[in-house]
Length: 160
Image (tube, rainbow, N blue to C red; front, side, top):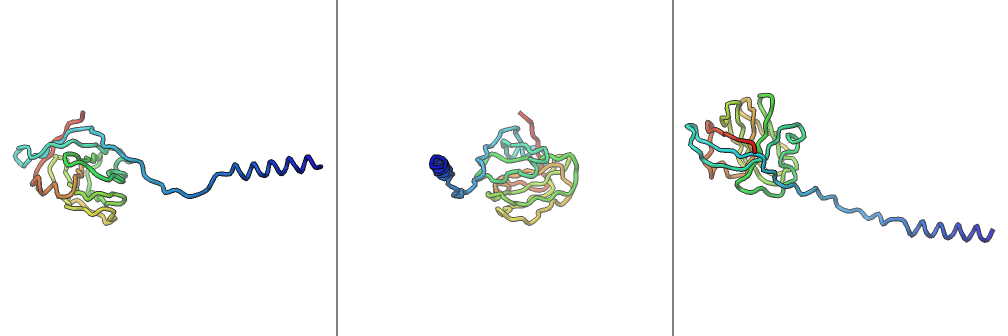
């Protein structure tokens, strides 16, 4: 009986000592790296190049939903181009997006429909296109003014 009590006590002590400390740790989102998937030209209405940038492409449901969420920064010469199968009025919001953006809506003829300037980080207000759009380009806030982009300008992109 004494041996049984001794073994039970040892097993109990070992089980207590082997328990992990359950202190809670903050969950941090993974660092997301820019993927250079294509080059994009921003052109004026007659076809003169205003700016060339490197872009990531979002062309599936998961990429459409996550976009630039959780990114801490984006270089000036980079952006994300969303490509949709359906042409319709689009709306974007800034949930879980930490950097301010200019959101550029583009029709099926590669023409800029409208530009939402300086979309606020983490804001969940829907920001709509003025007309049906096939593409949406996101760039750092303020760059559409610096690059003098306007309604009627065009884009042209080529995948790598």
